[in-house]
Structures are given as structure tokens and as C-alpha cells.
Image 1: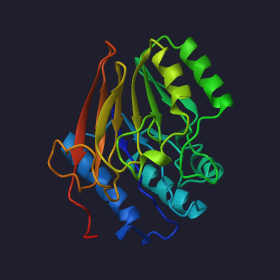
Image 2: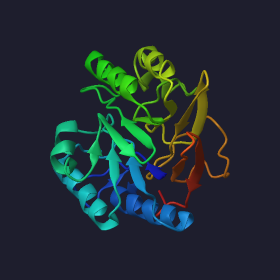
Image 3: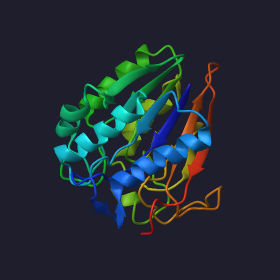
Length: 252
């Protein structure tokens, strides 16, 4: 099962709207095209890991839905801090799996967490969702890939770490005690990053829009380019990942 992760497109209601100096919708379309060209065929699933709509508008989510209709691939969506979860679900709930949700992926399960917290840039997993998560993991009988928007642990960036997931130890205690969890992916930080919590691997995804200052060297030598990540989920429970990069759609 091949899952393409894209992240942080920061769309706007205006199809020509700019965020961080770039046309957000065009950058996301360009990212999908570039990723598919590198993969030679479309992925089995697309995961977009939050900050979908910078202006938190219904129009922004409609623009996203129009793209997804064109692409015709199953989609999983996470709300980030730059999102309106109710409008997201209203516009896309029939077109995509929206967090919180457990999604069957062949021999795997994709567990989507909602780390959005109203009025906060930082993330949060409340007690009700933690209880739901624990129930889902106790019932799991297949390998699980967990996805959320905010980093579940600090990545070593003085600007981003204070606005990562708040009280992450509560989440990590649940994930690390669950034998079926094989990895965690997230967005928010606009860069490639990989690490571990004990033996549990963690991967961050670059943004399709613009990059933040990198904590770790980019394996492809283009830390300032937009990008994504391919996740290959094997029947034996193994995961392999491939970082993808492409030149920006237009100069910043």
C-alpha cells in the first residue's frame, strides 16, 4: 500500500490567493503533479496532514474538494491550527476520511488524529480523543500508521517546539504501549525531519507551499524546496519512506 503524504498547503478562498508569497492552490496542484511524476503512477492513498486552509474559509475547502475530484484517489485529511474543523467536514466529509478516524488500508490501518485546538497555534489531544484512541488501538489486529498535524515531540527548533503538541507525553504513552503502532507522521513544521520515540519512528513532511528553516540536513540537498513523503506499507508490518522534493512552482 503506497500512501503519498502532502502537507500544509495553506489554501485560500481566492483561487489566485497567495500565502507566504506563493499562489497556494497552484503550488498544491504542482506538488501533486511533481510527486506523481516521480512515483511513475498515482499512489493508493493521499494523506494531507493539516493546515489545509489558511483563511479557514468554506471557499478554501471547496477549492480543495475540486482538486480531489480531479485526482480521483482516496484521501485522508487532518485539521491543523490553520483550519476550521466544522467547515472542513461540511465541505469534504463525503469526499475524504477526516480526523479523528481509523481508516482500513489493506493489511494496515491508518489512524487519523485531530490535534487542532481552537484559538491556539499549538496542538492538543483532549481526554475524549485519547480514550477513543486507546480503544481503537486495543481493538487493532493489523499494523497501524498514526497521523496528526502537530509534532508529537519537539524536533529541536526554538521557534516551532513551543507550538508543537501540548502535553505530548500523554499521547506518546498510549502509542508506545500499543504493539500494533509502526510509525507516526505529521506536518506543521514545513520540513523533512525524522526521529524516534523509543523504537517508534517519527517522520515530518515538508510543505507543498514553502519551507521553514531546517533542523536536519535534507537528504536530497534541497531543504528550501517544497516536498512530500511517500510511505510504503508492507504486508509484513514494515514501513519504508521516500522523501520527495521539487522546485517551487514560482519564485517566492
